Image 1: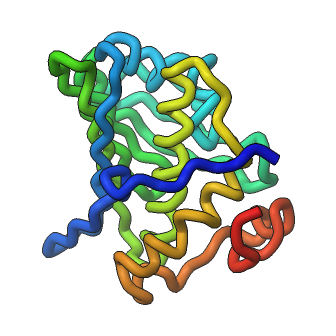
Image 2: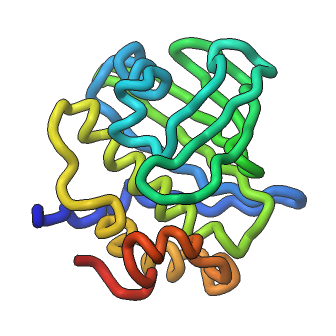
Length: 192
């Protein structure tokens, strides 16, 4: 087993509650140009290293239907739709019932990536916030061209308790799907 890096404070998502929306916003500073980050967000070969599913459908066409299939866990596929595609600045789509919005801003040291995950259900925000945290960590390793340390489930178990503490117990009433626990063990088993 490879040792997992400790999470950095600046990498944690921030809960944003509006009148009708619940979102977690992540901001990552990446030492890579926007075009490279864009390819990692949109090309299948790069997505396989960090995104939790495959993406089937025309990601370049606003309004196109998308299908998301898990390869590691026997969870049923989800449907979605493309909402925005503006290379290399903006990518937005629904992923099941949630909306994912990736915004890229160039700066002299690389790119600021902002991911906003908007949810319809508060109870799963800590679970999914921890999941997107892990995905963004893995994206960073993919962009650097090095393997991510440890397994995804180990990393999730490491950061999930912090998301529960930050967002509160009402944001953690829904745990991982049964299929995930059947594959990786109980969510409360702890890392490693």
